[in-house]
Image (cartoon, rainbow, N blue to C red; front, side, top):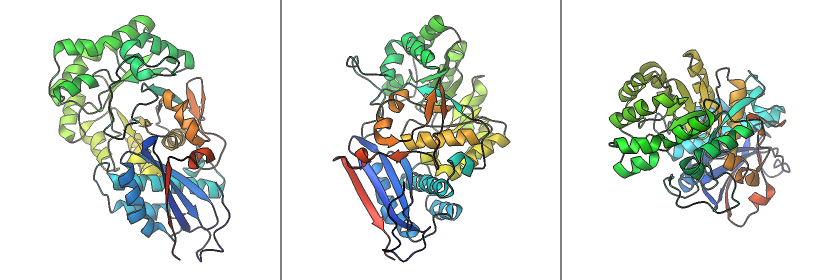
Length: 414
């Protein structure tokens, strides 16, 4: 996005950062968009998810005073400087805010060079990437609270892609619908509600049987045509997670994701050794360094990271390369926002070890398109970037001007 030049108003070079804005919409209260504008009017777009007000505070009170007046092209310098203030910690406001900043700077770099992000990263290993569907509904994760997983009652008639309700109640129909669209993998979390009942401390055999029901019905209706991924959201202790894994093995899930909290690498290693099903970990990390332990000490099978949480494009690229050195596949997370999806697709095009790109079709064919122009192109279960510089996504004017959108701006004082 290019605006009229700011050079007449500020005495900084054209590639230096002149303005940083955050945008938060009341209808998407967990999502924060970050726009970074240089003195010559070029704008890059970043994004992160959850803790929107805390992230906004970090952007304007900590990141902006450092960034304003600096050269936007010095991405590694800015990543290293901001990283000093969040270090090896988990995903807090600092990690989220710095991730959004880094994404916006990479978007700017691509626009300045007139090249897509995958080319800025060094080139492409493929032309597109297979997508898998995370089975949340249109309103999944919308509440401004710890995201919940329960859906009470049948959805209203006419609402599209109520996939959370679908995997709980009509899993065979849901799988059939996804197969028709070209998806070969679907991700479900039928044990989460059971974890809420016990705090994840134990699971009764009858509850295991309840959680297995979608697997049984999908396999009976569609055989092996649909791969099923099991998400456990880090809700269980080790014995319960191991019991679930043993019970689900006959249904051959493609992976088990975040079976326990990512707090003890040795305990995670014990889980990995207990099952032949590949373990996926972990979107829930806000730094690149824990991934070495995941690979070398825990031996996880597939590495997942979220660009909008882990430290932006800079860190996600490092994580993908680290996984490649350990002969492990890499997947970007997205159950958050449209910019994160766009960035993930570019990372998948670039990384030779990319396996799949996560998407939520209820988001992609719903509110994502209301917010941004320039989404990745979906065709027959595969995603590719639009033919645009940067990551391609730009906020729509109608979204930017909506009454429920709060914009906060930090201009340069030079």
